Image (cartoon, rainbow, N blue to C red; front, side, top):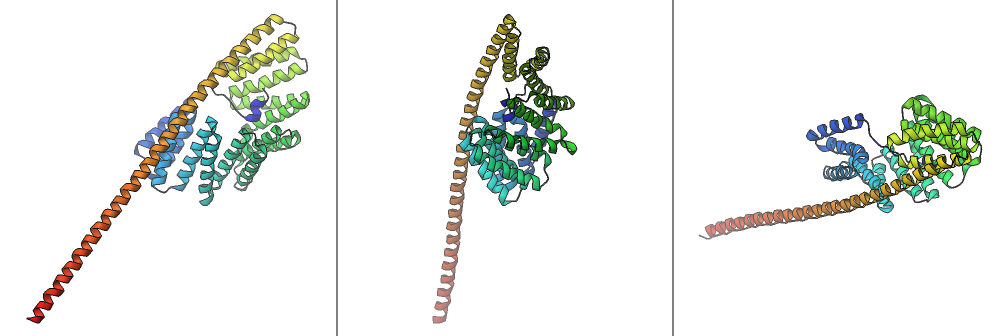
Amino acid sequence: MKRVFLIVVLIVAAFNCQAFQNLDSLENVLQTAVGKERVDVLNKLYAIYNRLNPTKALEQSILALELANEISYPNGRAAALNNIGVIYKNQGVYEEALEYYIESLRISTEINDKEAQASTLNNIGTVYSLKRVYDKALIYFIESYEIFKSIDATGKLVDAINNIGNAYMEMGREDLALDYYSEAMSLSELGSHSMEASNPLNNVGNVYFYRGDYSNALIYYERALNLEKQSGDKLGQAYAMSNLGSTYLEIKQFNRSEEYLNNALTIAKEAGAYPLLREIYKTLSALYFKKRDFESAYEARIKYDEAKDFVFNEESSRMMAQMEVAVELQEKEKELQKLKKDQQIQSLQLENSRIIVLLAVMGSIILLAAGIIIFRLKKQNE
């Protein structure tokens, strides 16, 4: 359960009306947009479709990349490449993701787009982190951190710092992880970024939990829960309450543990957050066992197995969908390459035609000039 906030993977069951309103608005703008504006709109549509419909997100990214290439728009091209990299990363096709990220980074560096550069560096670090190459991930996270800091992008800076902490935590260097989580937390709580502090707060709580320092773990989990309540993030509240329930179980405050776990369970059910449901049922089973309520412990264990099976089936379906997207992406890339090749052939044929016409015109001019010269010579001889 504690890896949930370290890996920073949240399962969201539904999207609010604002997302769909933004989608409709962008689709309307797309109908009349041309040139750079059209590329930008396509890239924005990707960001929405990536959560709603990955296949559609892929289509937007391909279209954005093609148009950006046609009109020589490097900013749009870098963004589209980065988006395709995200799709590959989500599919678990990490080497392909890195290729797109690196090309995006090259362009962003050339045009000196610092924010895009830092975001892509952060994405590259995430891929290496997923590959468990944490030392290399750190190099990219730190470079991303330095750029975000130089341009005063506080919100994104918090993410970079948190990622550095996650990498150190995975490497077993809890002291360093705690330092970075604390920095992210402090930075988040300054100014307008206080809501972003919930993630580092949970991470700090996790460090203390692993150390067996449950008093401090409770303090940070409570602070995280309060922030989630302020932001209205129900699922975030459920994760924090689940952490609190686990901690109270460890210190044998069974009633408080059960209260938090049941509250978390209610939200998780409403959200259809099966990975979280699985962990809650697992903790509830342990709680009831310690309370010697063996019937409830058994029932919770059955629910845990059901949630685990659902997660497995969902993961299998997701992997199949990702494979389909990967195949579609490859096909679209082939189409793009064929289109480019056909365009090159047409361009070459057109160039050859121009040369032939030019030679014919030049030949005609030469023949005409020769005819005039011969005619004049004959006149002189007469």
